[in-house]
Image 1: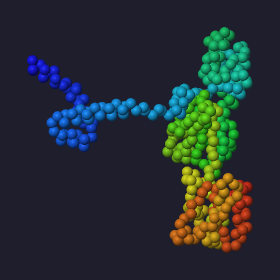
Image 2 (image 1 turned 90 degrees about the horizontal axis):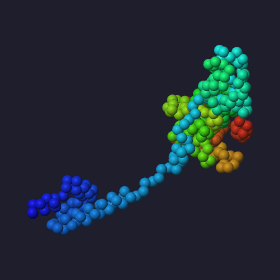
Image 3 (image 1 turned 180 degrees about the vertical axis):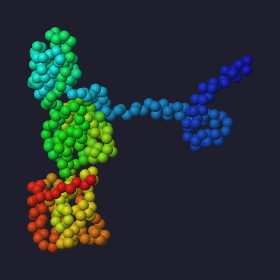
Image 4 (image 1 turned 45 degrees about the vertical axis):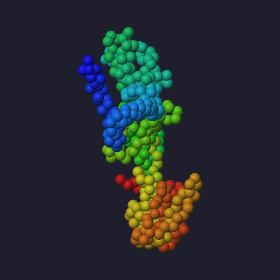
Length: 373
């Protein structure tokens, strides 16, 4: 009988494993202290510590996890996974329709009218807006099967007018350009004549949700929830550092290329003009002088000036700077900000040169723009 009772009191292997895990989850310092307790006190202490550890783990597991970002949830709900990847016909497109057994067509150009219809010989008006070329061919085959045995219509897009993309900002020919086939970001910028010398490296793309979300990590919804917006670094794409960001452009996308911030160096330097800051937020006076290829022989570096725009104003304040001491290391180099003008006067005619500079900056003429590679 006593043997049976001993077997009943013996804990199972699973129970021992749970006790072992609970015990070793207690900090080592506490376990060592408890092991030093003698006799029954140590047994009672083990039960107490086990209960505390169990309560701790239950409390930790009961802490609610942070909810996922509401923006990411909204993006998933609104964007979906479907992205229209083929050209869809629309008002203004001109088509060439032909069939071996359909002499009435004879490759005559047909334009999609404002309602999205085309006038087809024999069949009359057929709605094609929103269809791909393949779907249009299938629809015409279906309509003409009443008049022609086994029609095999071929549709070619002769002129595209319904897939506009707006390219704005610092490009050579801004405006509305048509997407003809599959075009990437760089191809669309090339169709706009390329970026100007004063263009920045940040490009913004805005896309209607009808065409899916922009497939970039930086993409987010606009406040109205009807568009996705993404910004990317154009320089990295052109240098093939991030070729995956050279994404396909879809109809009604808006591509904005902002003008870059400039640093102007003028006066007694070898190469005066504006220098694009590019990815950098600032540069120093000595860096600007190096881009301007140094001082002329008649320069007066001790009386140089930085002309800086006041915040929320069109006026500039003059800040004297001793370039000679900066070159000699006697004074620290001075940082320049976007739209600053570094003026290096000559020994004479300082005021006249300064006024000429201000007029050139305001009119945007007479200054060369230099873009560093």
